[in-house]
Length: 247
Length: 247
DNA sequence: CGAACTATTGATAATACTCAATTGCCGTGG
DNA sequence: CCACGGCAATTGAGTATTATCAATAGTTCG
Image (tube, rainbow over all chains, first blue to last red; front, side):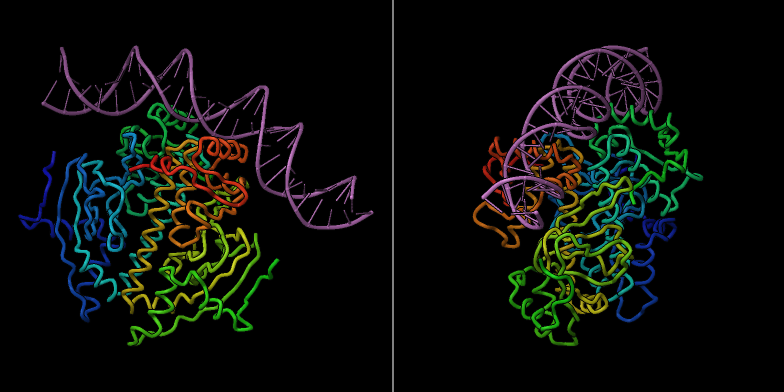
């Protein structure tokens, strides 16, 4: 169990950030390296603080109207809507290197909440500083735009799959898209083997199915030789299956 | 039947643009008015051309990797994925004032296509010009960001509804969200009465249902006194029903 | 060892899809 | 003016999928 709160007090926040293997994530490298020294002219530091939170903690809720930008450094989280009937709809899974609110600088306030799925560490950037740098630094501007575009693509794919897919399609394609994102961040245990700290209940809330369904489908997918989700890992069994996608 | 192609030859493209009642749409007013004269210093015009296309024409497909930004001036269109099995998944409905590719300036190329749903007129902005102005004009930057945020919100709502909703929820909430967007653009026939040029087949491809289902649900919603979709119009019958939403 | 959570299983009910077949509406052309 | 074809909307019967609701194993952690 880790404690919540800032962990910058002993000054190791910065140190961990420098040592972080997500530094090559397009956003971190740009915002921290390019905006500090390289481009020199008039670019200033973006003030940041480091924090941590335990599994299950709420990182952000619709009430919290902050202009701050959070970067997930370590651990997993998820965005979700709290539905009126008490259930929740998980909108996206956040992995290390992701921005918690890619549009925080523009949006009045997001209408979703964000919760930690595992213990997490994250970094909080000042929104005003970031916006200033964005306008001053076309590279940073492009990078953020591309992150937005990637998120939008993923969302579109997700909603298409939810619309036309049956229970099996939904789970299978969700797993594939997640695997693809994990690959991009180097979060691979070995070839076709990924961390997958999601319980069946979580997958159910992502795909809009019941926990019982998820269980059956997961077993089915394993028997079919498509993917194997177990022991906190996702294993892609047969690349041929993966081709079953949209154009 | 209108002809496809540019209609700027007789010079009435600009004229129509000036007379367009979508000019107050946040993007057009900012990009055309603010960036020309008001802020003076160093801001240049964004070069643009005007075009039209007939009902059913493809405005954009994944192959077309252009950095250009299209604004829909008049008529309706939709973004869609062409699925491998021949069906198509409609991702969003575009109404006058919408950007066809909000992230065109960043994205390598969108992986969806866009088709005209009615006869349309649209405006094509040069991506390089636009990007230059974005960096030079914080107001324009904010406006585009907010458009992106609005789109993202709509997409998130859509995907949540597709996940947890049954056939009725999907259609009902889709109609409500569309009505809300139409309101924002002033496209209201009268109180609670909106244009709705979508066939059952289109609604089916949006919601992932079959045409037969859509038909039954639409009739049901009318009997229930929720909404009435007929004769190319959408009528919201009972505001009380509208409250049935997520938090 | 028990408590709490998670995964698994099975029977039943509800829901949505499939597949025609039918109707109504236009526009075309005889 | 009417017959015809094409298209969208509607209807119904039968089938398949998924939700619901328990109830039973496993697991983890104290």
